Length: 256
Image (cartoon, rainbow, N blue to C red; front, top):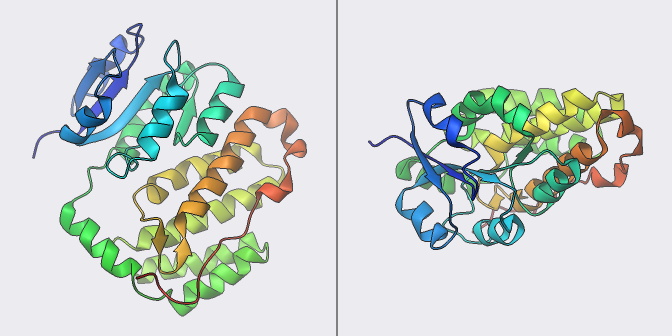
């Protein structure tokens, strides 16, 4: 199997120094957005890094995240402006990092997120997502929606450990979002941001509905919280609008 393709997009060659830092990947440097969607699909891209200057990254991110063929490719916008980073998350980017953060986290991020989905595993995930939410997870969901974020952790962790197959990512994703919300309530900015960033690797491969849970909404809601955290910074955590910590929407029966 060919190496996973890691794509860096910049009109000013800002990523030139990163090519040799990922020796086990097929690193591709692009400076134009024409036919980008087709290129990413053909190369089965596993990660896209976008230099925010001077590209029209908003239109590009929206186009990629609303296309069924590319929406699962994790996108990281790189920019030193906190407001731009927050906007990127709200527009659908999975991550928004400063250049210093990218320098420090590049290899770890790629190791976590650059997963080319195996067709058989994705088919199995689809089948498992059509099943009903297990009772233990349903109890954890009730706790989450009551704002009992600390207690939901144990139930989803138990369900995750007891589950075989890719659907276990659903339980781990909810668990980590809940822990992030708990850290927000405790005033732990860095702990909350860290858990929300970690949850991305489980959320982005899940279908929009899984075991009756509206994953698309959970993804949007948790990304919105993360974007606002990044906009405010640790000194202004108390200003975070707690209404952003939304409940998880779920039906009583699995999707079909």
